Length: 171
Image 1 (cartoon, rainbow, N blue to C red):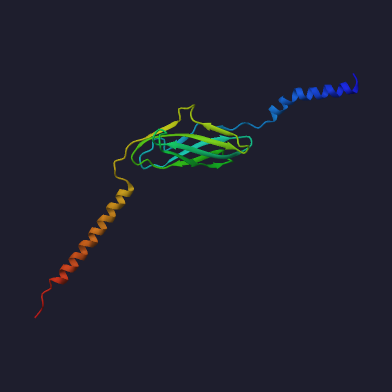
Image 2: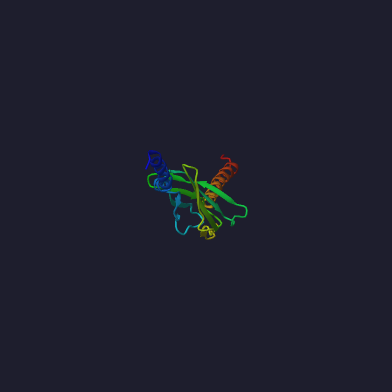
């Protein structure tokens, strides 16, 4: 075999094996696990913490939680998750649903190569239900306390004015 033929054979073998080498050397893709929520059965006054593992060979750029409280009709909210690259955990908070209802959500992540991954539970989304509250919330309790204090101060002022007004002269 001539030196020229050897070079061509070498070049062709590189072209033949290059896809295999590139495949082995490629970093793992962007992956999003199934999320968990805490508390597992939230009440109307509970902030819900969404916890999910996100991994990428090139590193994770950002993670967001997209949620709706009206089945994606009008209210759609995006929350940026905090991501810990050591634990590979993303955590985001969904605020309390004081009047109860159904929360539907999914996760979107980008890696450092701007690849996007979505975990929407195969199009079914992740959901949790919040029972309707009793109508008495911490805010309602605070207003009741303020009302009682105002009524007590008002009563004390009224008694003070009444006692000053109806004093009998001493002779």
